[in-house]
Image 1 (spheres, rainbow, N blue to C red):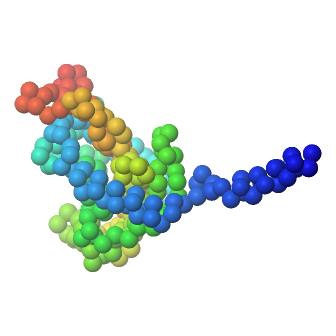
Image 2 (tube, rainbow, N blue to C red):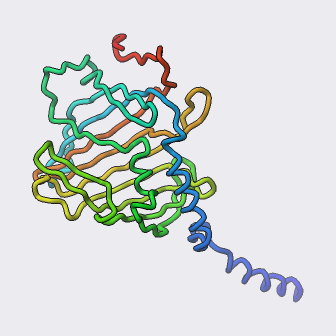
Image 3 (tube, one colour):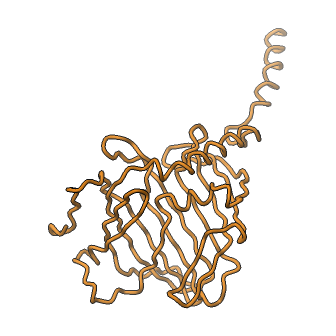
Amino acid sequence: MNRLLLLCLLLVPAAAVQAPADAPPEPAAQDRMLEAMEQYGMQYVASLPNFLCVQVTRQLEAGMHSDRWRKGDTLTSRLSFHDGQEKRTLELVNGKPADPMKRHWHTPLVTEGEFGILLSRVVDPASDATFTWNRWETVRGKRLAVFDYSVDKEHSTLTMQLSDLAKATLAYRGSVYVDAETGAVWRITDTADSGIPPQLRMQAISTVIDYAETAIGGKPYLLPSAATVAVVTDTGRVRNELEFRDYRKFEAESVIKFGDGHE
């Protein structure tokens, strides 16, 4: 009995000092993750093939102090990615062929960055971003390391523009969700909510981009699967919910069919 009791007492301290599963990595391990993420981000756009996909944008609008979101138009676009350049062509509005002469529900909120622009500017040394550990988080069954970052106005390349009336470069902050082994980014966010000139007529803008493994030409790539862009204006709120689907290799004869056989 005495020997058994002694063994139990010896085992208790060992179990007590084991690090919990959600404990932050050691600083050196965090540095390795960030280095892998920087390498991944800098090579991301160049590693993508030329492809086509369908982008579906659902527009929503709400009052400043209301949680009742009113649905607007659903815009379906053909998106081509060729030699690192994105091109969107509006094909359907609410499931019907787009009429360039017909006015939309409201002017679409035009954004970019889903295919690597946001990621590359965050990891670019010229942005001088500061990264701090936040937490571990499981996203769609994958355990990811979450780092918060911030970029000051002096080093920012984030610009906001309201027609031709006003344009400004803004400081921003956000989070990156990183595969601790490979540095691959599965989610990235950004927010700008300070130093916005009144001429822009907005108080804040934020973006969330989710990536998923998608096969193109038989090879897997991490590509955008969904994104949300939210804007707080002087009078209310606007949100775009984006879905990316039907990825395929870009070839001269590539065709994407839209509703009712519309190509």
